[in-house]
Image (cartoon, rainbow, N blue to C red; front, side, top):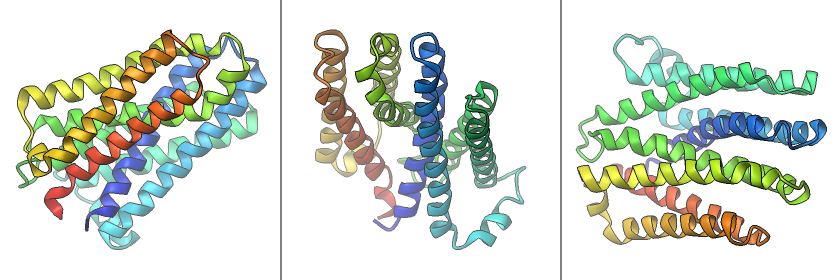
Amino acid sequence: MHSWPLYLFTLAIQSAVGGCIMLMLYNILLKKVLAKDTLQKANLKSLTALTVLSVLGLGFSFFDIGYPLNAVNAITNLGASWLSREILFTVLFIALVSVALAANWKTQHLSQALLAAAGIAGLAVIFAMGSLYSHTIFEPWNSFNTLIGFYGSTIILGAVLINLIFFPVFKNTRGSFEAIKLPTLLAVLAAFIIQFAFIAALGSSLATLNPAMSLVRWFCSALAALLLVYLYFKDPKKSELLYISFGLLLVGELIGRYLFYLPLS
């Protein structure tokens, strides 16, 4: 696949944006459940992961653009180019997440205002990214499905990232897992169902490019959702199921992105 820089760029940026949104949600839900220092350690790890992922994502994009100076040239057409807007909002998102990380490290306190600003910039990145692809000559991309799929992936990948960082906290702090399980499950299921419903209702020629891989993608996502329901409401002590379910969600998203870029192969 010749489009691997775009593949990695979109996955990294969407994971970082989704992680930013989920981190905001978890801080609202957990601030009365966790000790301040425990929450702070998890926040610092999360912000570090978000910053590293977003910087890596921008770095991957240079392999597609050519070199950093081309990114400067690409940003000069904000009025007419979705690529220019995507680059601008990506740089703004990275700047805000980096500032949030620096502020968190210095004050030992998460700034929800900075995180909210980064989240808004991140949602703008995803909108520009989806609009860029849906305004191309490739028929499989040229639909509202692209935007829905990208936003769904953002929530799913963000939930995977933040849950894996916070899971040691959930295991060691009574009540923390109960505080986040329903919102997490609702967010993941909503993203999965909306993705699937739009593709089923509006159709997607991406699936016809590789029907077997498409079937595996949806099977992994559906099985992951069922495992999460079982884990959260039937047997929350089986922690290994969390890793399996989020691993399946990640595999599903990786396959979905592979199918997305097949027209470029």
